Length: 461
Length: 90
Image (tube, rainbow over all chains, first blue to last red; front, top):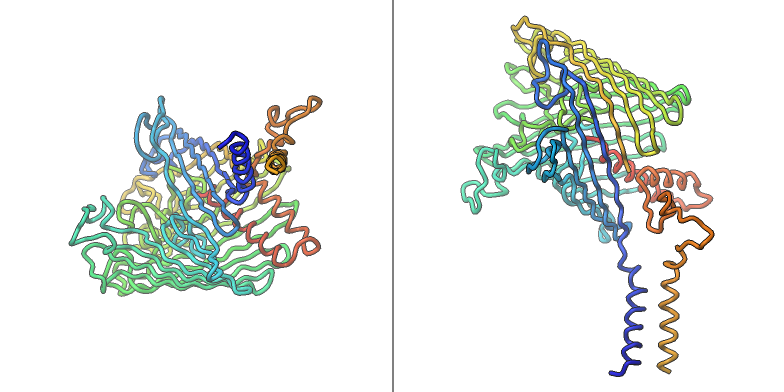
């Protein structure tokens, strides 16, 4: 081949490659956040019980970074990945494990995978499909579940109606080393996929008008732990209805949900539990926003012929049934009474679970948000919580009253500094307790009222 | 004939390369990308910018966009808001 031919062929190949690139191009989207939360508190600390007499004031520095990369082939197809790095200042260095690496030296393998899922519009059915590990919440503000789960969800619009169907495998007990049966490859007695905790979901939302939406759901949680035969699975059936409306400057929403079947962790009794919520928000334009919320989850007693306590899902290596709370009510804007939306390793609340040790919870909150300037905002919240069902050993229904306030200042358009204070006046149900999740019994030693002050930086991009 | 083909292809190659040269600064202008990280060729939008620009486009309404396109923009706005929520919540 002579030189001219070689040049001509190289030019042709180069040109074709150049014009082909756009067809193969991916849109690369990067997002993320960094949060530093410095706290002075006698309660919100990962290494204390939560409530105690003379509970020491501790200083805690927690940070979280999240990085999200989205590989978008087109509007119809993208891969979403989301990673997280948590550390508490001074915890460990040269370590392997999540939530570590904040001590001098750092150098810790601590990247967590939060989400990895494929999001595509199916060309055959026209539905949007999300398959993989993804963030999912119930249609009831997370009081049943809100967490990252592995599963498949398909949703489709029919005029004003959006219907969603989904399946998630929340736990495979035979793959959980801390579960009842440690995972053994090629297991015959307890193979993978036999003893599982699964969630099946059907959800519909209908936009009646621009200002009114109504919805309904059916969720089935099928719990088949080791030692329980498939025909005797512990199933929770949940049905619910919800609505949201706008009337001028007033926005309101409400829901009602009912659970039947059996308790998630105990066989033998039929379940009949319910929850209800109402929230109203008045937008007063420059004068700010006023909010009010009320939540009720039912509670029950061990002596009841039917189990009446609201069931919420929990996660963690402990086996799915207990462990870490996967339910919350962030809408309350409580910081100590209920789980806080910004909490990290020290996530702790007087009501960690909406089941609330089978007592349920009744919560009333009011709040006010003010936009003082373009850069500065403030909010104040007051909330009162009580158990829905008092147990024989409880001194009272009253959990406590929380007052909190926060001032936010935007240092940049995507960096906000926040100064927060929160204080709870304990009610008799918690006043003599010695842990965040325990209740007063016969002790006469009063625990200190919990408090929290924090300075927080939040960078989001 | 070959020469003509080579010339045409060479010219075409240059044409597709032009945008790369276009981004270069002239002697009289400051390179804002180097100086202040503004106007860089591959600058991507933050999630806040994405939400704001979607909001602006939706507000342009049916004078600019068809009903179908507005629905698509609204869907993207919801996705962006969900994404922001998931970044910030526990």
